[in-house]
Length: 292
Image 1 (tube, helix red, strand yellow):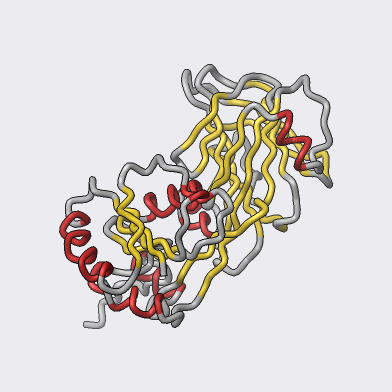
Image 2 (image 1 turned 90 degrees about the horizontal axis):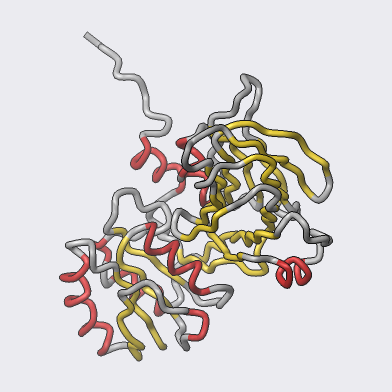
């Protein structure tokens, strides 16, 4: 089996882990290499398994750079939370042994594709190929696509629509469109709902809406979301997974749809979904009763 290790060497505990696991891997697999700069296009790398040593950010970068390549990915969390990178450093190398033996469950994760098209372009948003030809920016994301107001931090105006609904005008600081995987990221901080990883849906969560009645909405993953920049700031931008961005000007349309591929994520069978929420976010914790 051909294995690639993606390592975030900026995290102090990752380098010792790499030094420990690499000799072990070389005795058991064809180790393709150690990728540390997080800029290489992974869609052309010939591998059977990618082992990520870092955190959720490192795994997000790996997912984006695979760009549709169907390679199983497993993440070891050297970061803070580790929802996506669900294995702990202490599980090295036992978890890799299970992966090599095909004993780990697979969790397909929905990914999004976002395109920015100039306002003067006529197009059918349902025609993916036409959108790709006419777009000025395109990227994929595992967690979320966020339109942020940016400097000088005035409220922006968006037309929020789908391929099935003309939508509504929205005033506020921006909009989050997230997957179920991304529902526990920026979305939850903005008051959005937690979605089970199995839910094939996208959630639209407003950032500081200028309305008391605006609430997040969950839609099916077959929808195409169209966000039109009616009024934006000089620093307004589309940000994918908090890592890649594109500046927006008035009239730009941000077209967000389900990507043509999912991420093949290997799950930690010893880390239940609700257990992870409880341990990492104190979800459903009981009050601190005084029993005296």
